[in-house]
Image (cartoon, rainbow, N blue to C red):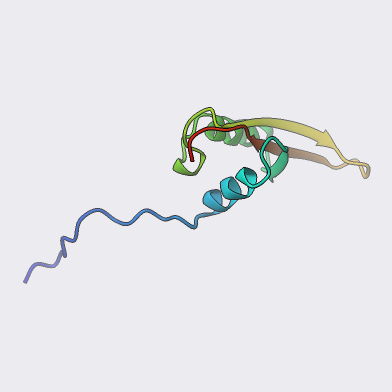
Length: 92
């Protein structure tokens, strides 16, 4: 008996964090939402680019989501990096 079981490609995960975020954005088209608060502005910019380009399947097709990274200073003086995104249309 082989130590490896060959069963075909692994199933796609449909209930990932990103799938839930994308689904929520689709339910509120054209409304901006804060989807992440990364620790650095570089990570925020990278996450926004990943959403715009549909690097993750949850945000396909590319261009159906807009996303931007912003650094804001809260009333208490804390600096927070945010990723804002919204669904703008495309095939579902």
